[in-house]
Amino acid sequence: MRRGEPRDVEETSAPALSTPPGRLAAVDALRGFALLGILVVNITYYASGYRMAGLATPWFTSLLDWEVRAVVAVLFENKFYLLFAFLFGYSFTLQVDSAQRAGASFVPRFLRRLAGLFLLGMAHAIFLFPGDILATYAMVGLALLVLRGLTPRAAMILAVALTAALAAGMLLLAGLAMAGGGDAFGAVAESAAQAEQADRALHGSAGMIISEHVHKLGRIFLLRVFVQCPTVLAACLVGLAVGNRRLLCDDPSEHLAVLRRLQWAGFTVGLAGAGVYAHATWSGGGGAYHMLGQSVNLVTSPLLAAAYAATLLRVLPAVPRLAALFAPPGRMALTNYLAQSLICSLIFTGYGLSLVETLSPLPVVSIGFLLFAAQAAYSRLWLARYRYGPVEWWLRWLTNGRRPAFVRPPRHTALPGVRRRRARST
Image (cartoon, rainbow, N blue to C red; front, side, top):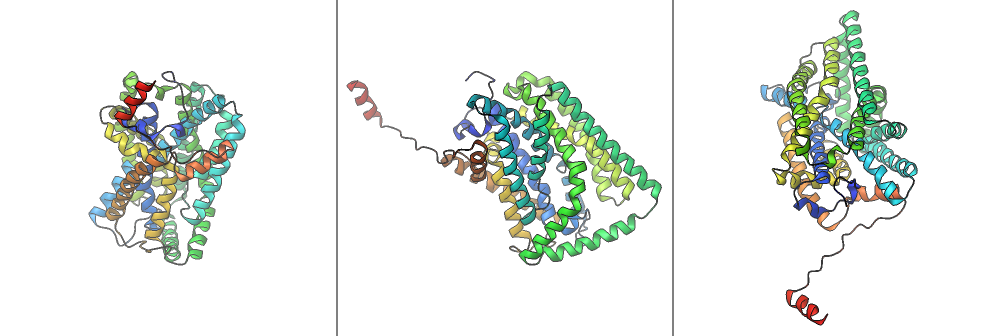
């Protein structure tokens, strides 16, 4: 294969992880890194109905509790799902290339893939986590299908325009909230009542938990359609532009100037914006300030997410152990994402231990890191024997319309003496 020629990410084999991280190893590592960040954020929602309502649990109010919340808000919230969306758009270009090489029609393939993602996402949202992102990816994938002919420049312009329009909309809402006066207390009181109701449901039976999830899905539907979908689409369009330019096919050292600029922008403007967002989220400053923080967050979170990606791409060649840590869970990210939800549900809801609202923020976040470490180790062992994660294998079967090989063929190593005798006999 020629240098820089695109390959299907799913066809990369585990032994490649022992080599210096190249293009596909870097993409897998980025995906694994994003998976960690998503888990750190999502587990705080599993642990608290109040968090789902945008509030802090009333009985965890120590300085350490607030510091952990602030760190998660500044460094993690709204950054890693954007990185994942970027990789979704980037992988879209790889799938187009894969279909062309196989001589298959891309559109039916991709539509089957989106249907599989949507079904998984809806089941995930109803039974495990109403904050699911897979169904959103499926909807955004339809837009990518329509926009796939955009030039990289046009894709970037559209991504910036979408982000700017959303930020302007949030500013408008902030202005309306400010002009409307102070009924923020009533809104907070209502949210607190909803949080208490959610806690009772999450402590209850499976039927109560599912009913609560369905109720939340109905409440956040408009937020998904008008805010999350355009935000994810913007990140996917950036991934589409990068994939069409084959920028991640090259050695990162060939793009050091661009990576440095991303780091400077992300770790200055991006971090400053994240600080504003965190303060607006947790200070109780009212609806107008909250909307202002959301507007700032929409503009600056992509910068910080890009800085994270640029930093990892620069560090990977010098620290191959990072690829060994992040690439295996990244290669089976869909399986791990769903497994995270199942395990967190068993820990925090009535499906299992029912620990919702019983652990302070630090133990909750620590469980997230420990869970990811366990998944990273297990993913490496799994991929030594199997080609794909189980959910990836099923989705690949659905996408391509044929059953892919699952178990890796055993490696046979002949004894040196046998090899020499065979050589002499020939």
